Amino acid sequence: MVRVLLRFSEEQVPQPITSQIILEYKVPIAILAAHINSKGGEILAEIPDEAQEKIIKAFRKRGVSVTVPKLIEVDTEKCFSCGSCVALCPVEAISIDKDSSVKFDKEKCVGSTCSICVDACPARAIKSVKQTNSEQLANNRKK
Image 1: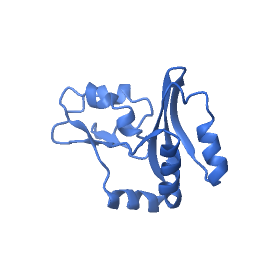
Image 2 (image 1 turned 90 degrees about the vertical axis):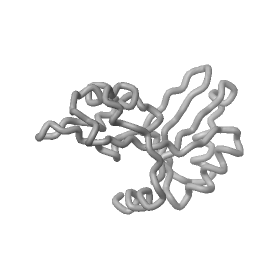
Image 3 (image 1 turned 45 degrees about the vertical axis):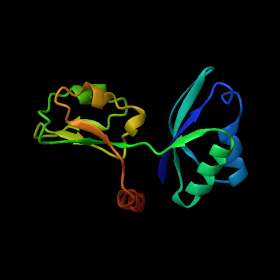
């Protein structure tokens, strides 16, 4: 599965674009997070690898902005385990391990669509990083 961020304009919000694409291509799209109102919105979704190209193309053809979000990475050398990131993470992707070190769960993280932890880190030990193709493939094989 590939995570994508779909951005909808104010004009696109009332249109059933996502459901039309699901029905038209018969591809299951998992919605992981969504924030939509009358002024526009975003959906973080997972798309099956084999359908990635055609689904992204279909969304773009309808004028939806599609990006592949970056992941978050913790620099253990800089991190002093203050817990600021843990308290703020809305999806509980960051926790404190038994040895009091920060533990990061890439499977739960919604990546650069959130980035609250990046801004909150006083040591600047957390940053957004792009997932390499080999990492994407390895993660996809696990699922």
